[in-house]
Structures are given as C-alpha cells and as structure tokens.
Length: 337
Image (cartoon, rainbow, N blue to C red; front, side, top):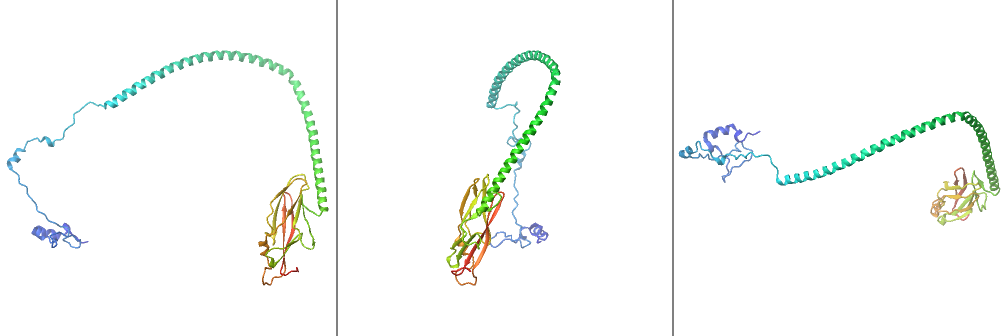
C-alpha cells in the first residue's frame, strides 16, 4: 500500500530540511490537490504565529483571583418541597383522617353486632343441646320398638319376595307370549302380503314390492326403450315406462333409486320416496335425450348396427333391494334387428 502524508518518511525528512518549500501538491490555482495516487498527497502547510505579551501586564495577573472563572457554589438549604405539593398532601391527609374516623365508627358498630350474635348463638346452642337430649330419648325408644318388630318384618319381607318373584315370572311369560303372538301375526300378514303381490306380478323383497306396468313384449327386459340413430335421442318405450312400488308391511318404508350397467344415466334421477304401511305408488321414468343420443349407432354414416345396452334400476330400502332389468335399443334404420 502506498504511504502518503506524514507516513512517507522520505517526505518528512525533506520537510525538516526545506520546510514548506518541499510541498509541491498545489495546482496552477494555488489549491492543494489530493488524488491518493502520489506519495506526497495529504500534506499541507501553514504559518505559525507567535503571540506577543506585555511583561507588565503578565506581572499584574500573578496571585490575582478572577471571580468570573470560579464556579458559583449553591448554598446549603434544608430539604423542602413545593408549596402546591405540600398543600395537596395536607388536603389528602385530612380526607384520609375523615375516612379513618368513619371506618373506626363502622368497626365499633360491627363489633357490637358481633357481640349480640355471639349471645344469640350461645342461646341457640343451649336450645339445640336440649333438643338433642329429646332426640336421643326418642331414638332409644324407637330402637326398643324396632327390636320387637324386626322378626315380623323379616318374615313379611320373605313372603313379599316370594310373591314378587312369582308375579315377575307370570308377567314376563305373559309379555313374552304377547310379543311372540304379535310377531307371528306380523309375519303372517307380511307373508300373505308377499304372496298377494307375487300373484299380482310384483317382484318382492323383505319389505316392499315393485312391478313394471305395460310390458307388451316379454322377450325384452322389463323396461325397454328403443330409439333410432337419426332421432337425436328420442324414441319410445317398448316396455314401461310406468313403475309401481308397494309397501306390504305395517311400517313406513323409504325407497331409493339408482341406475347401473351400460344404461346408467339415461333416465332422469328419481327422488327417494317413503311409503306408508300398505301404500302403493306409481312412478314414470323419463329418458334424457342427450344421453340416449350419445349411444351408438349415431346419426350419419357408420358401421355400427343395431345395438342393445343393458343395465338395472336398483330399488333399495333399509332391509331389502330389487333389480329391475332395463334395456336401451339403438337402431340404425326403421326396423329393429
């Protein structure tokens, strides 16, 4: 690193010999320039003035105390506070004295009340002791009477227990018989209901039955919809579309409907229904043209011939379920097959 200024020992030696003449850092305008790239940078010169004093005046200042140059010491005073603070403190003390006087009066009143209560308490203790004595006497008499009837009570309890056990057995058997009779009657009615629905052409589960109305061509599934490729999803039901459900039990039955297989989604969703005991209800299926139109064969030229897509409408309850076979028949021409 380049040593500049007074760190440059060589330059310092020149200054000691030649003085300010050794400094050459002034530019043409007489200004010192410091660039940091020369060893002579960072050194300036100035004149050293030597003051002159009058000897007579200096002699006058010897052993003279100059008050203006000595700091003034604060006088020592007693500890004090502002009068405003002192007055406020006196007022607060006076207020507290009033409060203390009032509280002392309240304390005296309370002490008097405590003394009265202690007197009343002692009187009540005496009364309680007397009543305890009466109770002890009564308990003694009661124990003597109880000892006389204990034998009779034991015999009576044994008799009651035997009678109670026999009554419980009779009631339990009677209730069990009634429950069994009701179950048999219910099963008989459900069995007769199932048999009746089967005779009517219904498919039956454990608690409901279902039937497709208007099955005109039995060689096809229970619900069959046929549409031509050029009809944009429109067509007609060969079998169906009316579906009838029935509750042949004595309890309400809630049914839900879903679609599965290749035909899933061609029908509008059927909301769940609740059938009252013995209630029949009819439902009408509706196809979705856009869904049906998506099945092949489609309109226009194609190699796919008449095609049948199969699946089921699944009807479920809490304890049973039924599958209703469904077919979607898409034909290219005017005749099926």
